[in-house]
Amino acid sequence: MMVIGSSGTFVSFGANREVRVNVVPHENEYLGFDCEDGYSGVVVAYAGEEADFNAITLRNHLNELRAVSVTLWPDYSGLPSGVLIAIDGEYAPRIIDPEEEYTFLGHVSVGDATPGEYLIPMSVYAEWGNGDASISACPLKLVVRGGPTIKKVLLEGNLTVPMKTYEEWAFAVILENPWKARNLTITDVVPGEFVVENITISTGDYEMVLHGKSSHITWEVELAPNETAQMTVKVHTRLVSTKKGDKWEFTSCGDYYLNEGAIIKEYNVVSEGILVKALCEDDD
Image (cartoon, rainbow, N blue to C red; front, side, top):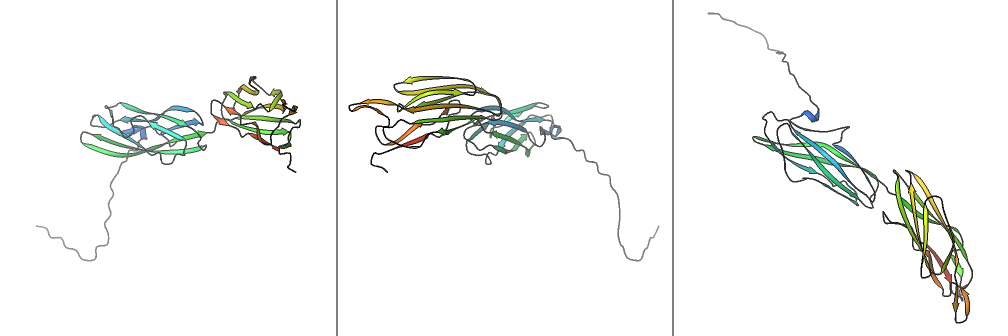
């Protein structure tokens, strides 16, 4: 028999234990997913266009070698108006067999949306034979880029004129093309109160067709990224026959458009029109 006795005050006890942690990249986790530079994918979409993309790829690395049912829950709440996006199989389960993968495909349509970068958080819910899990995957990055723009500038002439007088104007249609090369069609109409004297363009080809007295202009142009083009149109008032003889437009006072706005047909983008006011004969 052994008797051990002690006296005094117990102060502390120390011990060491070895702990090993194996850190693996996201693609090698039990339910793996691609995450490059912090995103499941990067989608570049242009205003007025549509695009298909890969949203996220999931892989089944479960040790049990069981099939896994996965449901994707993207959060679109941070997207601007004018962006419509849908991902294949969102909110609906997809089955991934052991050591296989599944790529969720998406489609985006961009209308009149504010250019910028937007994040779509991606949550995944997974179920298998004896377990389940909720996973916050890397977000999808959406880059919205603006489309071509068009504007109209008055170069010569007055916006307020007297009735029945000869007047001249010149205006420019200016086209700006950001980001990528595009083939564009621009249409414009000069109303019948005016006669088109000449048209000059910096690039491309144009055609003018008369519909009655109005002049319908079509401008075809191919532009490189960040290239600008210009069409200059010179017009004057039309001489018309009346019961009291020939007179220059405008034979009635009021507002007249040099045009109602040039249009980029592929994007339905319209410039502002240029408005001319003909003063009544008793106006100062």
